[in-house]
Image 1 (cartoon, rainbow, N blue to C red):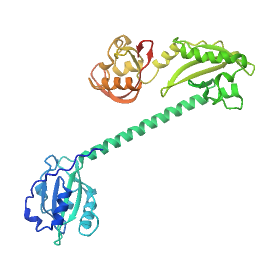
Image 2: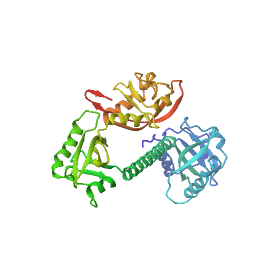
Image 3: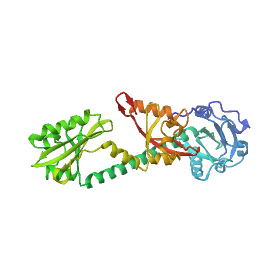
Image 4: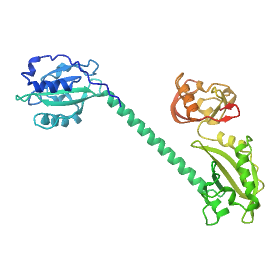
Length: 380
């Protein structure tokens, strides 16, 4: 973290005589330390004089500190630090910087970092303070960022747990196939029972899960799913252990890598499962509790779900379609550029904090996840 260098032009003391006859070595220590505030204390910790070199410090009436105990100028939690610094400055212990908080009339506190050094045989002590607000603000931002990451991680783990529960408990056989090597990446218990018996399917070539006469069709199923621009999932009939299975495959991306989701169903239990995946997807998306929007590359709304209409208080889809998403989402001229730049660069944006504006001008803090999808020459 970048911290503003301490002010080296500390103003003159109000009463220069308060320093007395300082030894040369003591003067060197003071000059080397530098700072935004310089305080001269007697052996009892009473402020004899002070100098302020930073007019930006939000502290009132520095002059009123004179003749007061240094302890009385700090907040309660800093008093023990002051006592320790005074003891260390009066002994031969190595000096170190300590952060002290001073109360202000605004009700908050101002953080300064201090070092205290003994100033001669008469017991005087000099304390040099540096403005620590910038570093404190950065630390607070870092803390908030860490907390946000922890919340995001917790949400991700919860989502993963829900996915695992559904994947493991469904009675339908489902196999996830790696798009690069065509080997089984995951298989749920129903798929293990249907195809592998007691043996695990993970790591095995997908086409070799089936009888020899079906292996070419199994490989073709994945190739067709990858190459097809059709919204209907390709479907074939495969044979395994003497049983016929209806199989469909759909291509999806996860962490920018390709995978296939293959669904298997015994032929004797169902009619051929030629599924209009586009219709199913639209139905599912429209029932999501979170708002979802599809836009063109210029962020013009093409379609949206019911939850989005509720969020922006629009009664019909026709009132949203064709409108710019920036009418409802983000701070003008800021969030749009950031969102588009990250989509172009990474292809995906997760948990982007912004604001949502209803058609009546009401604002609500929201988080946005977005993905860029190419279909032919178009981007969505």
